[in-house]
Image 1 (cartoon, rainbow, N blue to C red):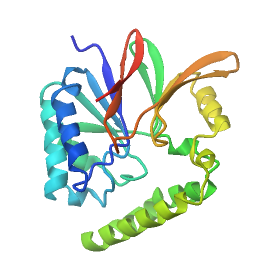
Image 2: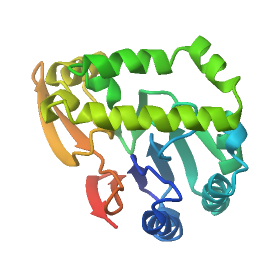
Image 3: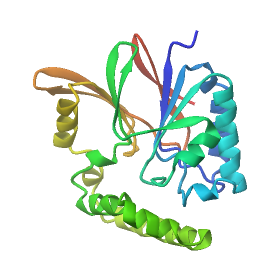
Length: 241
């Protein structure tokens, strides 16, 4: 019986990382196929220049693998991350998936569960939050998508290089979630369990907010090896692939 759900994020799939891509394909035909739902909470791809690039062979292969999983009865849910903020309805339809708002409150096997990508919790990283606001601006997105694919890809790769250079100048604490931001979002949504990615710091935390104990699960990235979170009526458990 498929009375459980699987959560992943920060896979950062790209042709340059074939070992992890193969791990992902194995995950879809192994661990994920037994689930009722698969939630991908952002950064499925290392970068995404727009849904009109969905026919590029690598992108098409990922969509086909996800569509095959959906065809086997697993409900697929995609959330945009900071690397694939332009992932949209056209790609989701190709996969047989839906797009989740960030955040989304689920009623998961009797437990209120808030799912997020996680970058909005990193409020101490002021420069990143300014860039996030720019990247989510509908006018800026339309301007970017109006350019040729090759130009978009060039700009994205340039932004990635700038981002990596900027990280070298930031402390780990600045790039992690801000405790006050976590407490605010838990309070605003009625003290749920929280599942998110983005920080690449997989762990289970317990926050006491206004006298309520709230569980927070941070999902692993897939740079070195795959990992996921399995949740059912009895709770959640981290799995390494």
